[in-house]
Image (cartoon, rainbow, N blue to C red; front, side, top):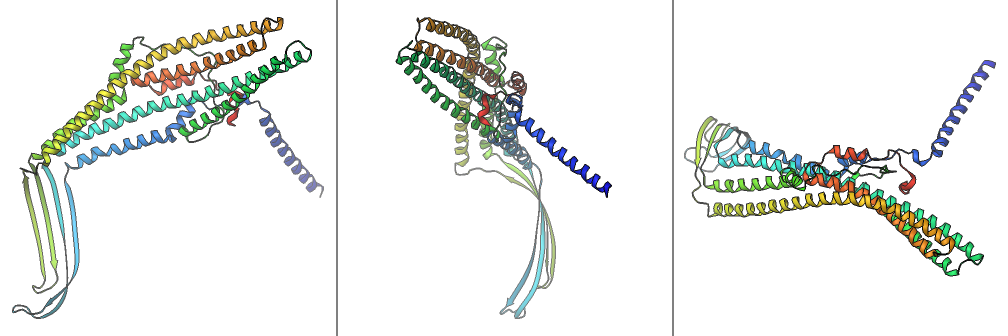
Length: 467
């Protein structure tokens, strides 16, 4: 009895300790600071988007469907074998005849036909097989372009989210600073050191920054939704861009070289070129409507009739024929379709030229934007330092009476605006760099991995609004 009670006591203690440990783990997990939460990175978002972005998945499905065109075109050049069989129940009634007895006869009949058809010469089929190569090439180029566009779309929405988070952080910091100044201004007014207008001005600035904070919170929530639209799921905290990131100039540092690369490797331009080549082949295909075709047909026919006026009858028939078809005149349809194909080819040629010019514009704009953004990041970085110095001097001047509360509010607002613009310019530089490589047709996952390496793996509390 004592042993049993001891065992029960040990078991109860074990359960109590296990429950205590579970509670302890939960308490520690809840008490962990938000900065220890592992954040979603740019590569995490990309991996989700590859599997869940409807826009990209749709283009990928179209590419896979287009791959079947070559098999279908090749099938026209291969033999076609068909088997047709039948079985019938017959009721034959003879009303009057000098050769057959009058009456009703029931009998069965069955048979089958085995046929083989082989195109010996049909130039139309050969052109369609050649066209399938251009169709697949166009689809593959569009898929590659979609992959690159997905990288840029992800980066843009990711950094738009970080910019919105920065705006919220600066709005909250400005609110906190103005709140301190408002309290200090009220204290000065209570002892008669300043006029009531200074209090009203500080209060108005505080009310304004409250409204800005509300807008910033709404914008951040909207940017989270925009990112979820691509990945198909909502994200928690996201990794931030490290304070110090390199500003890499385009290499080669020659806009003409970038233009040459784009004209030879831009996937949208390659797709337009494949479409134009297809349209050229379509002219040839329609023109061959007047060409002769040669076809080989072979068949084996079997029939078995179990009765009727002629009695039982069983027969087999084998046929092999070589059929030549020469379409001399088709009512003008062939000439019309050939003319129509020429117009479609002209349309395709103009579409290619339009894409060529657009590609040149895109790569040149992106190249210049990268250079401009590098200089802008540097200039805004220096502007932040200068704005901080101005704020320090203005606050000192307010203490000695040479500056007013309005001066301090204005300089503080300018500091936060400059800090926000500086952060935004760093994001824009990265997006412009990716867009430049996309326009040139050389953007790869390695470029996204490089940018991902500039992110901090641990999130801060500034994007906690998503939780």
